[in-house]
Image (cartoon, rainbow, N blue to C red; front, side, top):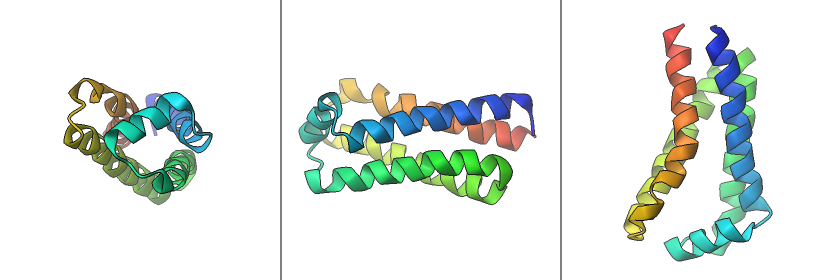
Amino acid sequence: MSTAYLVVTPLAAIWVAYSAVSVLIRARWVTKSLEDYGVPGSWWPWLGVLKALGAAGLVVGIFVPVIGIAAEAGLVVYFVGAVVTVVRAHWYAHIPYPLLFLAPVVASIALRLAT
């Protein structure tokens, strides 16, 4: 396990956890976008919980690799789905936002595979 992986993965987990908390506390800057994209309000708590579980899985995955792999895969699916949602809503200028959360997860995967 590389030092880079041990640095990037917890940072990715913190970043994803920040995103989860933002949804769970219904931060207006998040909920406004979700409304604009047509995501039903009843989904928001579930989306926040999924991100929180993914963030926790990244951290646990440092010690239990199979959990980390599952968390990474789940978060990739989640954030690719977020990109698809933004595109379907025709908010093309917002595409970078889910990519900002996807990038560190992909970096964690790349660093895991590099070791």
